[in-house]
Image (cartoon, rainbow, N blue to C red; front, side):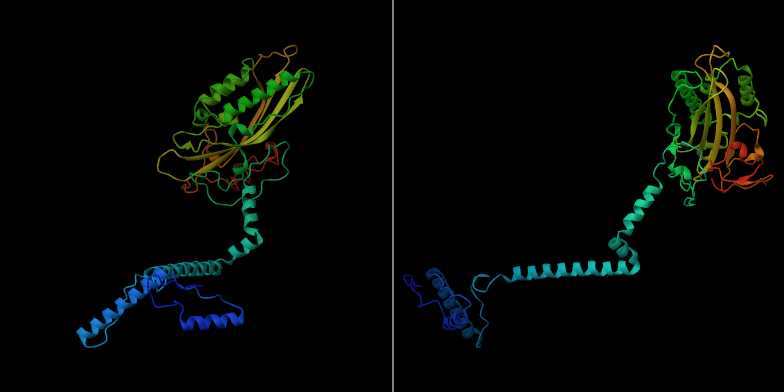
Length: 399
């Protein structure tokens, strides 16, 4: 270590105290030799020291007492970091600590109010419950055989304009025509596969035109459905016309078509939930039969605007159609012949049977006239055939 006095100065820049501290650290095996300031640093320091002494002497002369020394050193030159910087870092640290404390206290309060959140997070139970809820509303696979029981209970929340199927098993059913799936077509009873496939497709078209056409649901004439029927079945077409023009208990268009009175209600949401199946079997010689068994769920609101109440009517319909080989039967190619058609409606005012329209009941309806006194049935239960259901004017357990 050398001393550079070429620019003047007062000798070594290392004080006795610093040197003694270095000796003690060296004996303990720690520390390092104090570094001597450069010649320029020593010169500047000495100049500033003399200016401080001169100001102090001037202050004593003016005020008759020892004045407070005002260092000429720039902030941080000899005193370490500027006080403004130190104070800023201190405030920042205090703000960080305060924020962390607030977050910690809020977390403790949340756990105290809802400890299950912490338990769910640690055990994963919350994620399993969320997955379970999502799975409970996942679409069901297509129905391939008659169910053995009614659908299980669903959260009893009432339907809303935004969620018209809330609280209904139909929430998991397919939308509209997507729920009318066709079974594989094979040759049956000597009828080739292509004819069986055509019969299945036309039966599907009839179900769509009779139960999903918005115009028909609004009370309109089912022109498309009528056009699918064989004109050679004159008695069937004549009966359909009578039912549409002058409905009655015996000639009721609801046996084949889903229709609502537009003066009372209107179809809501644009989606009908659908579930069911088709089966194929051979009949007599040259005959193939298709049995269709489907349930349709219709959300409706009152025709008058301003109401936010949603009602649901559930219609179960069975239709049997036939293909007849022209070699053995009188039939029009490319059409359907109806063999049988039946229906059962849930949440429909059966005291008004024969009007030609479905009449949903709303929860806020004021009951007038006779009330149904028959059996209570579940309209979502597809485990029994329509022939096995009660024939009286009863009520439904849910809608």
